[in-house]
Amino acid sequence: MQISDTHSMGLMAVALSLGLLIGVERGWRTREMEDGSRIAGLRTYGLIALLGAVGSLLSKELGGYLLGIFFLGLTGALTASYIQHQKRPGNDVSLTSLISALLAFSFGALVMQGYAVEASAAAVVTTLLLSLKSVLHRWLWLLEKKELWAALELLIISVVVLPILPDKAMGPWQALNPYEIWWMVVLISSISFVGYFAMKIAGARKGIMLTALFAGLVSSTALTLQFSRMARESKQAAPLLAAGILFACGTMFPRVLLVAGVINPDLVSLLLIPILVMMAVVYLPALFLLYQGSQTVPNDVAPPSTPLSLASALGFGALLAVILLLSSALQDSIGDAGILILAAASGIADVDPINLSLSGMSRDGLALNIAMLGIVIAAIVNSVIKGTMAAVIGGRALAIQATAPLWIASLVGGLLAVSA
Image 1 (cartoon, rainbow, N blue to C red):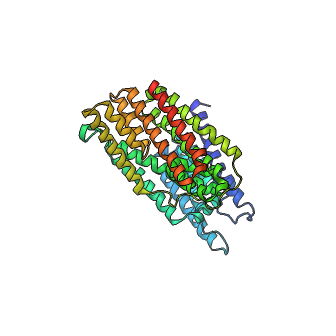
Image 2: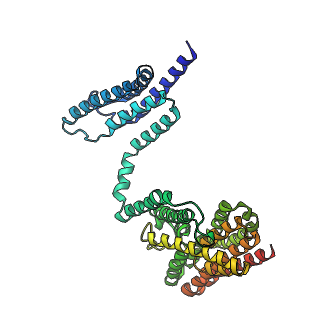
Image 3: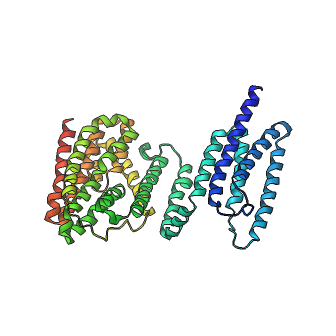
């Protein structure tokens, strides 16, 4: 037997196995039905995939049209069987089995055309989708209209808008890159979207800490405000709420390192010590408060009201654009001092925009130590603001348990950054 013949036999075996894989799932689902009452079973799916392989092999010798004839003939036979099947009372009217059979044929043909890996991956995904019928239907029933709209909005800004934006520097001082700015809008929106559903699926009632960890990915400032109000009304839950605030605020520090490292890896070595120390000063008290905290968990802790706020995402993009322009303008006019002033002002609202701006500018000529100092200053100001919010709204208990660690972390981080 020639090597090419052996290779073809191996590919046909792969095609047969892919058909049998789909057939196992289909056959298992209809295993209680009588023989002859189903459109296709385990053996039929295997034979259909093998038919696709044979048709593809013959088409290489006799012309590509032959494979199309095979496909049309199979489609006609399956359709006739489907129509006859639906005449029987009580039978499922779903087209799933018909489509699955056509896919099995296509996978078999793809294998013989040299796309064995792609066909195998598609067959596995097909089988997975078929087996998840009840789960997917349950999710569909649980899906709210606002969540569907949020998913569509996320797809629009990521799949439709992002690819058409120019990926080049433009505007005053060549400071604006529309693609990079919009990519950050998509990133922040995606974090918000994932965080919302993670909270909804896991259930906020399972613990304040779980809510804090998820909400910290979306907005630690919003969580600080919510938990501070709850602490003022529920003194007993104050230690656990303080731990939640610290955990949510602490997520900012690894995020700073991650974003800076992705944009300019050279910044990481300078940021590492002050950021890690600040993170430790915040997380260690949080762990202690979690251990000592009350077991009373408020029942009204809920996910954000909407999975995705497009207005907020656009506002973030606008803020990032303004910071990029101001950063370039201040550096051009008054030098590095203007950068640090802007970093402090930006930290009042958010750390991510100035982090993105300074990390990008450090690749284009801004001194690494100035970029590092500006990022740390923004993180310090942001932590001080959230600590002050907790003390003013939450009262004396949160001032000791949440505000003090945030302020101490800011002080220590500032000293380490200046001495670096």
